[in-house]
Length: 133
Image (tube, rainbow, N blue to C red; front, side, top):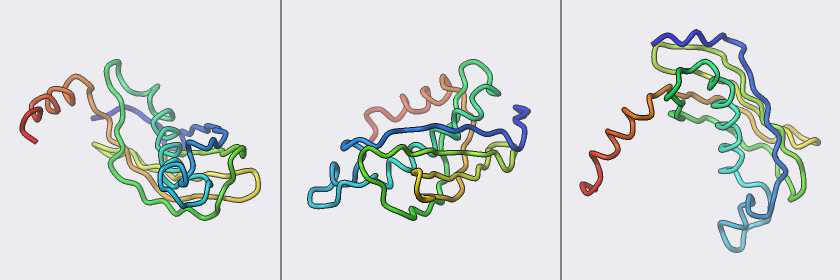
C-alpha cells in the first residue's frame, strides 16, 4: 500500500481534563488525575487525525502498537496538548513519535504505530466472528 504520507506530517489536539477522564473515575479509590488510558487515547487520536487526509475514502487507520510512558500527573481542569509526528511509513503501517504536555510538564512520550484499513473489509471480517466468540 502506498498512501504517500510524508514523514514529518503531524497533528496537535487539545483536551481539557474532566473528572470522567481520571483514573479515579474508572478505579474507585484511585486519585482523580488524568488517566493513562485517556493519555493514550488522545495520542492515538492525534496520530489518526494526522494521516486521515492521506487515506482514500472508506479507509481509516487503526492502532496496532503503543509504547508510551506516563511521566506526570495532571489535575482535572488542565489542558492537555497531544502531538503525533510521522517518523516512518512502511508498506502496511505508519510509525509516530507521540508526546503530551499539560502546560506545566511533559506528561507522556513514546511511539505509536497505526495500520491503514478499508472499513468495509475490516467490518466483513469482524462480522464473520459474530456468534463464534
